[in-house]
Length: 339
Ligand SMILES: Cc1cc2nc3c(=O)[nH]c(=O)nc-3n(C[C@H](O)[C@H](O)[C@H](O)COP(=O)(O)OP(=O)(O)OC[C@H]3O[C@@H](n4cnc5c(N)ncnc54)[C@H](O)[C@@H]3O)c2cc1C
Image (tube, rainbow, N blue to C red; front, side, top):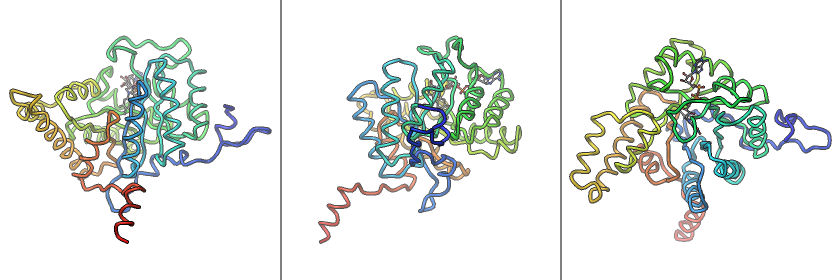
């Protein structure tokens, strides 16, 4: 794609980039919903095969009925998954009503390649990007090696994307600090620098102790009141089994607070397999409690890691009082039944 078109200008002989729903900014979606509830949003992962892709679409259609403020698609390091990621992310933007945020990571890419990926998202009508450095493939805690023609930090990528045109950029934030940051003060200063470079909001790493989120919010305001006014969107993940605890710890880079782990282990008793439903129930209860406290503390939105399943997130949202609009087919059946 031509970067003249990235800015929405028309180049002679080329069609102008269509103004599609994807041009709306995330921050503009963060007001209260018609029923007064705060917005929510969901994160999907790149499907690895056709079956996983079908599952993602089932989840996307379920969520569509609950009107999330936006959906986001993570970006992995694997080659074949990358092609599928770009295609599915584009389809979410063009074939659903969902405002789609594409994650963009610097791992393994030169600046020229990153510009070209951004161009392909623009072709799909996507103007919302979550700009990240990404983790080393294989081992997130392993040695970080910058691509020889790439960038060292997300801040540089934010500037590159903003220079390319009218994009709405978000960045990552870390309630307990990023695992490579020397301390919380440095971590906060680097987050403020990413926001100053042109990011409009941040989405946090998943956490289980709301106090960590509140302290992050305080730190950013203390570091730079202008940047502190930008939304910090908290990320949650409902735990549905003891196996998901491990996944949650990998994704958050932190261990679960002992009191929460004890609640899940009590539910699992001596036979986690036989007590699967009880563990799941406690996991949903914990996510609901976190959601309730975040709402009470004025969070701008609740962002759910879904692992491409709708059920657990939908249960938490229902517990929090969110309702699901009937699908077109259900609405038609109901109206036929009324006649
Ligand atoms: C909401 C969310 C979504 C994510 N989605 C993805 C995804 O889709 N794909 C993926 O691979 N990963 C994803 N990640 C993980 C993320 O890429 C990693 O945590 C990565 O290690 C850090 O990314 P960053 O953008 O915060 O990097 P940066 O902001 O560049 O920070 C990286 C490290 O460098 C430090 N630092 C920053 N600037 C400077 C500076 N000027 N000087 C010295 N040190 C500095 C930071 O403190 C930090 O320790 C996501 C994380 C979050 C929270």
